[in-house]
Image (cartoon, rainbow, N blue to C red; front, side):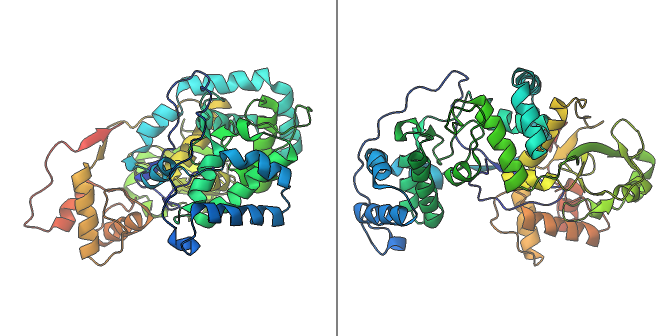
Length: 440
């Protein structure tokens, strides 16, 4: 499900931060969760007017009752609603790091996930067919999220959900969000879908095989196996139906429309191509992209129609290219990292039978971390706001890079290049050291 990312929604071609929620590395079923232990009460949180955790929790329970949660459900959940400083530490210690698309997609959209996705579609053909008929979401789209989020249920996390939620609700960073998630979790218990003991998942409170936040679970989970419960931890049918329901009704999927297709820019036209148009915020008809020299990856001509699409260059003009359609918005709503979103869309195309992504003919140069930070510093000196100078090319850095590429007459593909760094260093500055990392 949608990550608790501090990353912005990144448009266009850019090196993006990917926030990974900690999950067990093993593909074996998760061990039983450790029993919650009462932690020393933290200091009164400033955002709660200095209330102790116990007082805060009492108020939160009252809010739950006002929202319709029964006293029975609250009593059942009470033993698990304890503070855990370790959860708060994990949230505050999320690692943000730069990772190029080829590396991330190569690992996350690996062949085994494609094959397992295809196998799940065959095994649960009836549920997938029903979901596509009812919600209009193709089976590969559901299967791709299923594989990326938990390896089809193998890695869902093993921490008590309620403990995570109340701890993060008491912390001031996103207090209201997690207060709402706690109340939603109590509603799930009250509805009879899961018991408190069964609520086990990631440290951030996500549940089930496609990692739904409790609010999403309560709003979009459906009973697809007919047992009277909405069980996204153990019922593949419920997972399929619920995920399709959320994509269709929560993320506004458009029935019978594409989501992502790999393309390429004709080499004989690349020199004069308007690279600044490669941006998720810019949509052109496919007929216009065809006029500009964009073809399918295998060289076939794009349809001469008015279907709007954005050109995405996750590694700049020298890397892979994709056309993203209106349905791609569902991916960026699911997870606001563009690298994750493109990877999820690409994996869905692979599961549906598309060939592997074309690799660059030559390695794509990637600036080392120190040079990425230096580029950000130079952008700041030129008057641009880039956010934190951390070597991660977010939306503000990307926009600044494009503006400077236009200024210097360089291809404006928003990729942090050696050429731009040399120009910004000035005529008397030394060029960057040789050996900038190259990725294929």
